[in-house]
Image 1 (cartoon, helix red, strand yellow):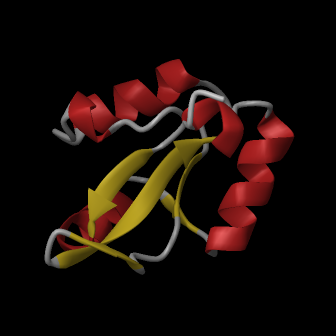
Image 2 (cartoon, helix red, strand yellow):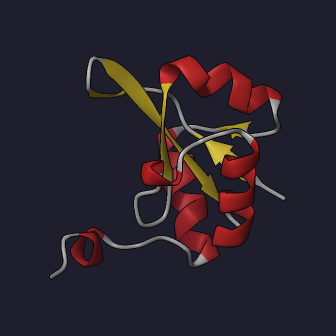
Image 3 (cartoon, helix red, strand yellow):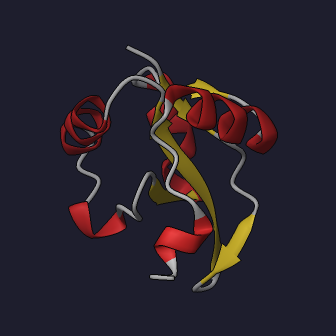
Length: 90
Protein backbone atom coordinates (compact mmCIF):
# COMPACT_ATOMS: atom_id res chain seq x y z
CA UNK A 1 0.00 0.00 0.00
CA UNK A 2 1.34 3.39 -0.92
CA UNK A 3 -0.77 6.36 0.02
CA UNK A 4 0.95 9.65 -0.76
CA UNK A 5 0.28 13.13 0.55
CA UNK A 6 1.85 16.38 -0.64
CA UNK A 7 2.44 19.59 1.24
CA UNK A 8 -0.63 21.59 2.29
CA UNK A 9 0.01 24.64 0.09
CA UNK A 10 -3.17 24.98 -2.00
CA UNK A 11 -5.29 27.86 -0.65
CA UNK A 12 -9.09 27.74 -0.56
CA UNK A 13 -11.89 28.28 1.93
CA UNK A 14 -9.75 30.02 4.57
CA UNK A 15 -7.18 27.23 4.84
CA UNK A 16 -4.58 25.43 2.74
CA UNK A 17 -5.06 21.97 1.32
CA UNK A 18 -2.98 18.91 0.48
CA UNK A 19 -3.66 16.12 -2.00
CA UNK A 20 -3.99 12.50 -0.94
CA UNK A 21 -3.50 9.81 -3.60
CA UNK A 22 -2.72 6.14 -4.06
CA UNK A 23 -0.18 4.94 -6.59
CA UNK A 24 -1.81 1.49 -6.58
CA UNK A 25 -5.62 1.80 -6.88
CA UNK A 26 -8.63 3.97 -6.23
CA UNK A 27 -10.01 1.21 -3.98
CA UNK A 28 -6.93 1.54 -1.77
CA UNK A 29 -7.32 5.32 -1.71
CA UNK A 30 -11.03 5.20 -0.82
CA UNK A 31 -10.41 2.60 1.90
CA UNK A 32 -7.65 4.71 3.49
CA UNK A 33 -9.79 7.84 3.29
CA UNK A 34 -12.81 6.10 4.81
CA UNK A 35 -10.69 4.68 7.65
CA UNK A 36 -9.50 8.23 8.39
CA UNK A 37 -13.01 9.74 8.26
CA UNK A 38 -12.30 11.76 5.14
CA UNK A 39 -15.65 12.46 3.46
CA UNK A 40 -16.15 11.06 -0.04
CA UNK A 41 -17.11 14.58 -1.18
CA UNK A 42 -13.39 15.40 -0.83
CA UNK A 43 -12.57 13.09 -3.76
CA UNK A 44 -11.73 15.00 -6.96
CA UNK A 45 -11.33 12.56 -9.89
CA UNK A 46 -7.99 11.04 -8.78
CA UNK A 47 -7.23 12.50 -5.34
CA UNK A 48 -8.73 13.67 -2.09
CA UNK A 49 -8.36 17.28 -1.03
CA UNK A 50 -7.51 17.35 2.67
CA UNK A 51 -7.12 20.40 4.91
CA UNK A 52 -3.84 21.26 6.58
CA UNK A 53 -5.39 20.47 9.96
CA UNK A 54 -5.54 16.75 8.98
CA UNK A 55 -2.05 16.48 7.46
CA UNK A 56 -0.17 15.20 10.54
CA UNK A 57 -2.93 12.69 11.39
CA UNK A 58 -2.82 11.26 7.87
CA UNK A 59 0.96 10.93 7.94
CA UNK A 60 0.73 9.22 11.34
CA UNK A 61 -1.84 6.83 9.82
CA UNK A 62 0.60 5.84 7.08
CA UNK A 63 0.42 8.39 4.28
CA UNK A 64 3.88 9.02 2.84
CA UNK A 65 4.79 12.73 2.66
CA UNK A 66 6.14 13.71 -0.77
CA UNK A 67 6.57 16.89 -2.75
CA UNK A 68 3.80 17.97 -5.08
CA UNK A 69 6.00 17.17 -8.07
CA UNK A 70 6.78 13.68 -6.79
CA UNK A 71 3.10 13.06 -6.07
CA UNK A 72 2.14 14.09 -9.62
CA UNK A 73 4.89 11.97 -11.19
CA UNK A 74 4.04 8.88 -9.18
CA UNK A 75 0.33 9.29 -9.86
CA UNK A 76 1.08 9.63 -13.58
CA UNK A 77 3.32 6.53 -13.58
CA UNK A 78 0.61 4.53 -11.81
CA UNK A 79 -1.85 5.21 -14.63
CA UNK A 80 -4.38 6.63 -12.16
CA UNK A 81 -3.93 10.31 -12.99
CA UNK A 82 -6.95 11.99 -14.55
CA UNK A 83 -5.96 14.70 -16.99
CA UNK A 84 -7.08 18.30 -16.56
CA UNK A 85 -8.84 17.97 -19.89
CA UNK A 86 -10.99 15.12 -18.59
CA UNK A 87 -11.61 16.94 -15.29
CA UNK A 88 -12.91 19.92 -17.23
CA UNK A 89 -15.14 17.71 -19.38
CA UNK A 90 -13.42 18.57 -22.67
